[in-house]
Structure formats: C-alpha cells, structure tokens
Amino acid sequence: MLKEFQEFAVKGNMVDMAVGIIMGGAFGTIISSLVNDILMPPIGLLMGGVDFADIGLTLKAGDMAAEIEPVTMNIGLFINACIAFLIISIALFFVIKGINNLKKKAAEAPAVPAAPPRSEVLLEEIRDALKK
Image (cartoon, rainbow, N blue to C red):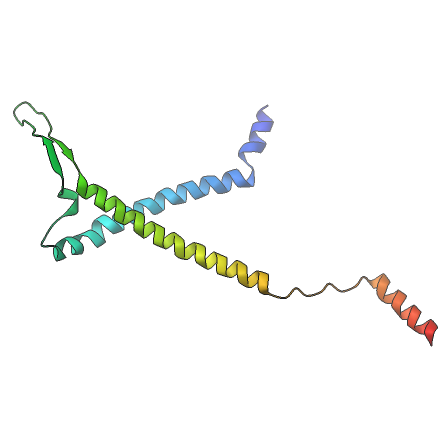
C-alpha cells in the first residue's frame, strides 16, 4: 500500500498541480501588494486623499474602556480585492491568449511528410529497374 501511495504522490500531474498551487499563492501575494501598495495610493490621491482600505460602515461602535472592537463593514478592502481580481483576470487573459496563439501557429504549420521506409525505396528502385 505504501508503494502504491508513493506512485500516486509522485505522478507528474500531481507534482505539477502542487507547483501550480504554490506559484498561484505566491502570485496572489504579489498582486495583493501591487494593488495595495502601488495602485491604490495614486488612485486614492486622485480621489482627494481617500485610502480605500479605510472606507467602511460602522455597524456597532466599539468601547475602548471595555476593550470592545467596533463592528464594521470594510467596503474599501472589498474594493481592493475587486481591483486585484481584475488585474489577475487581465493578466491570465493575456497569458492564455498567448498560449492559444502559439498552439494555433503550431497547428497551422504544415506537417512534413515522413520519408518512406528504406525497404519501400529499395522496392521502388527494383520495380523501376525491372520496367527498363
């Protein structure tokens, strides 16, 4: 049973999928930083110094003396997540479009006919020699 599990876990598809998931997580972190640290500050500045992360609705006020946190709906964080999603979607669109274009070019390339086997060539030579 252990050997069977090792064969399953080390299959090429399983390893490729694990690498893809890890790379996807790292890519998500990079996109989050891009949105929060690079794109949102200039957009907030253009909108009059608004920081989207601070936008929210307070549903219940907190009490500092009793150490009760306020209950808020963090709309700004949702806006940041939507912008990150759009950036990821656009990036993936262009990657997939590029891959499809490469596949299309490979499919359009004319296939070079395979050379006939040596035995066929010899038989054709014999046939031609007999005709003469």
